[in-house]
Structures are given as C-alpha cells and as structure tokens.
Image 1 (cartoon, helix red, strand yellow):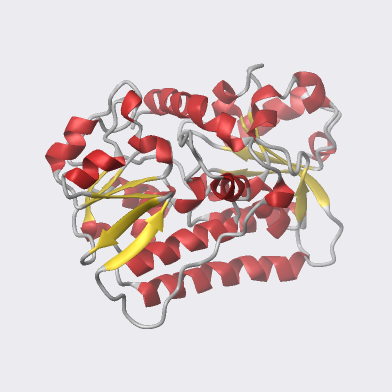
Image 2: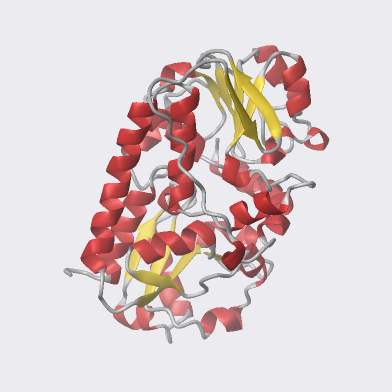
Length: 356
C-alpha cells in the first residue's frame, strides 16, 4: 500500500497491540517450538490456534493474507513456494533486506480488495472472496469492532482462520498467560516455528525443514564468527516510525526478536529486555545518555535514505560512540518476525565486528 496509508495503518494497529506487548517479563518468556512431523501431513489435520480448534481437510488452495502491518506472513508463503495458493494478499512493505523480495511480494494477487478505515480487509469483502483460509499476523485481524470478520463468522461460512501463533496475545483481550509470555518472548525461533507450521498445514514439511535449516545455518555461521569477540552496544532506530513514540522520536526497537537478532550478530541491545512501553515512552534525555556503539537505522518506506537518517541521528546525538566513529548499518524487515532475520543478522554483524 502507499507509504502514507501504511504509516496510518501501523499507528492504528499499535494503538491496540502495544499495551499487550508489555505483559510478562523476558525471564517468563516461553520458547516457541518448530512444528515438525515425520512423513507427509495426514488429513484431516486438527490444530489448536490461539485457543480455537481448526481443522484442515486438505492443503488450503485459496488463501487470503490480511495486512496487520506485517509482511512476514506473505514473505513466508513466498519463501516456501506457496504463491499459487494465495488468492489475495493485503501485506506490502516496499523495502526489504532482501531486495528481490519486494517484487515477489508485489507479484502476489491482491484480489481487488480495499482496506477499511482500520487499514485491513473488511468483513464483507473477506466473506465475498470465499477463501478457504484467512491468515492474520495477530488476533486483532479478526476483531469485529474494527470492521473485520471474526473467526467465528469465518468458521460459520466454512472458512478456516489462522493467527501467527506467537502473536495470539496481540489484539486478544482474553489472552492466556502462556500466550502473553510467548508474545513477549518472540525470537528468531518464532520465525522458524511459523515456517514449520505452514509446512505442516500445506504438506510441504520437507521444504519447510530445508528452508529453516538454510536460514539457521546462516545465522549460526555469524554466531560462530563473532563468538568470543567484545560485545558492542547496538541501538535499532526507525526514524520513519516516530508515530510510535509519544515524544516524536525515532521508534527504538527492543526486547524479543530485536534483542535476539542483535545478540546473534555479536552485540547487545542498548535497551535489552525492555518492552514496547519503552518504545512508546522513551524521551530525548534517555536517548542522549544511551551508550550507543553501533547505530542500526531501520527503513520504514522506500523513499527513506539510511545514510541520511544516520547522519541526522549522529548530529542530534554527537556524544554517542557510534556518532564519533560513524558506525551504522541499515536494515528494514529483517529485524521483524519473518523469514529474513538471517539477512539482518549478517548486515548488523558486519558493522558490529567488521573483518573478524
């Protein structure tokens, strides 16, 4: 979708999602498990998904991927070679750590769908499209008060719904403690778990295992390269997401998968272990005294220039060690929940430990 609409969409979703992101503590986080099974998938396949029992009589053939200000689900379908199962995709980003992914996501059919005022596909359009599976990155994608079809409505119409399991707590008022812990403890393994789940649902388990193995091997190669090296303090900042911060500062990402990506690259998040509450409330004084050795600039839209944004932050915070050494990396979707974490880990590692 156009950048300005995507910006408003993110703000609308975060208004609901951020309070839930602060539940629990990192020490309580539940580690996601990659779903694997020997041999082909046996149908009917029945699973529990965010407290709802769902059954697949066969591999889905008409999939609708809801927006949810994510691109990770669409990218997962692409990387698993499931493009032909996508009836309509509402996810789009326009910038990626894997540049080839931009056109691949754009090539997915959109089904002629339009967004409602809450920037996702309204209930009537979903029902009229008659998909056999609707995928949402978060539970809020099925919230009636936002004009979306509920999971119960979809089930009554013979349509199965699926939430990325690590995000069950997002937009779910009655989320269980376990769901809250899982959401708080997002990691790179959460990405692999979703790929494994799709592999099982679509009976492409070997393909999913091979993909996860390749991605994990790339990340482990970086971990091995940087092992034993001095830990450097890393800040991830998205200037284009300043709507997430009450003080108009760049969105500083911390906790969960952000910490995990930085750790895999040989660094430590400056605000490690914090929640989305910190992203929302961080003030200029806190940012000024942060011990930043390496700046990671996140790109939110294709019109943004990472080098220019880094220069602005260096000028605003000259006391950072990163500002003095002009040390920065540029990422986009690779630090989020999604299959491109290996790209971001590699990018960040090259500036955290260059030449090691």
